[in-house]
Length: 307
Ligand SMILES: [Zn+2]
Image (tube, rainbow, N blue to C red; front, top):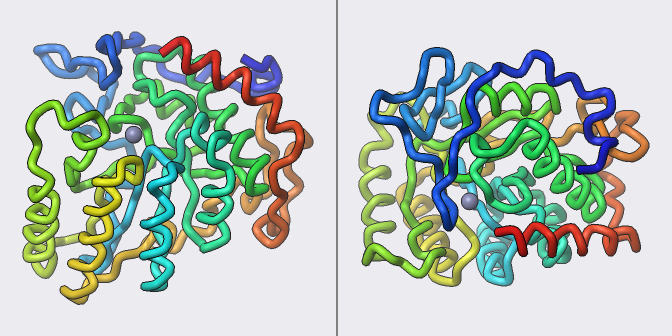
């Protein structure tokens, strides 16, 4: 924890909901037999969405592309493909991988992709204390700011694990959650495919959603990943399927016409971040990796050792 993260941060309005226990080895905490308690609105447990949560694109021709868990060396192939089709996506990046692969994040930003945050260590957020969650987010924000010069507003909880306590912390920090309304289940492939998941099911899911699109009330926001080579190969195939069907793959920021993708455009100071922010269009002058990036490396190692 950098004490600066908590200075001028008011967590007094954050609902008091018990901290959950994440399973050993990672994943979302288990939902109790009776479901989430009243007022908890725990998405991983009962798919409860908060009023500020984003989970769909407005129009049924739109397809919100979201790729989690990067940046990774495999992201490059997906970026090449999207560039060739002139398509942008939303990428929810992991802080510890941002400092590992800053050049890939820079390329994503330069290509106009919408950059969001996925935490530092991919720990389920309902299993963290308020202060731990602040540290996860603000170290990630600081790393991204060092690399591309802006601070994302939109975040994706690992495993979609969010309840009203987590939402309270996000709100205090000025962040907003993006969940999804379709899951390709490609994430099995990131973890050695322990369940015998058949990769062909991903394209099967996409085919099904495409055929449902004309009668859908809203557009899709799909969960995909750019971590494994297999996942990226499937993501590329999925884009081609959508384009062939006349759908419009795009970033979440495009389908929602967002103007607050980055905190700098909101003209407000960011708790705990150096110098605050004075507004203006930071996207026109991205700063690149500064020597102080090196100060983040020992922290990353500490996080990884604690996994
Ligand atoms: Zn993830």
